[in-house]
Image (tube, rainbow, N blue to C red; front, side):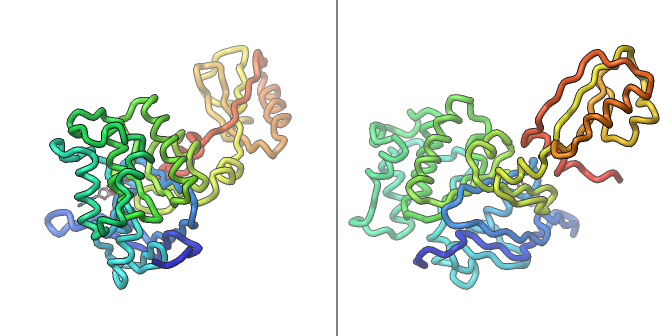
Length: 314
Ligand code: ADP
Ligand code: MG
């Protein structure tokens, strides 16, 4: 195995077109360029149908790319297929596990599939790491949803891949379980694993990931450290409640990014760094409106996401 490449995953000019039917095609990925630093906790964020699963399934060798290059741990997924595959562990979205095997058996079978010699197997260590050692010999059908998901994570780790990829690990999972899984993933990260997860929960990306890439419609919209993303879209909403109901925005306010909500609230989006507030207030006063209240709202990842994935007007 390559020792310590700078990037756990490198993607260059990646395209994927699916054949649909009647010689129609669907471009699921368009010229993606992306580098995932070794040791990072990387979030791939995007709405349903954005292309997240396609991207990670290409890395894992489960979907064939149309063009471009992908390296996992420095290994080209085509030229060095065997090494690239052994460098990655994938946790699929669906909870499909054989219900009649015990967690220990499932891990042993998986290790066998990856050709891990008996003496090198880490079955107990992994079961401990995902807090399932007490359930080692239980039937999998008796495990709760959360335990099954942890078992899938364990299964992806039997060949000790330096890169762990999780496709929507907490989709449809309740809040408490989600917290447990997050704690689990943080522990794995601390042990040195590079983690890539896809999610459409903004809160998940914001709380776990140090770097976030956003894809929409098969295109990479942005890729930045989480902190930078939040900073560079440092927008504020200023909500001015006026003294009488409005049915349309007064002329003088049309120069701002503003809209009317609930008849009497005008919501202005401004950059926190601009000191636009005075101009906004003057314009409201000049429009002959009385001000009965002013409040502000900091933007969060939710707003940024909407802004970035908003379709351009046709
Ligand atoms: P996400 O995981 O972000 O929800 P996907 O990668 O699953 O997105 O899908 C991206 C796009 O490609 C979607 O429009 C989806 O319908 C299409 N797609 C995915 N898999 C296939 C397939 N096997 N055949 C045809 N189209 C597909
Ligand atoms: Mg998906």
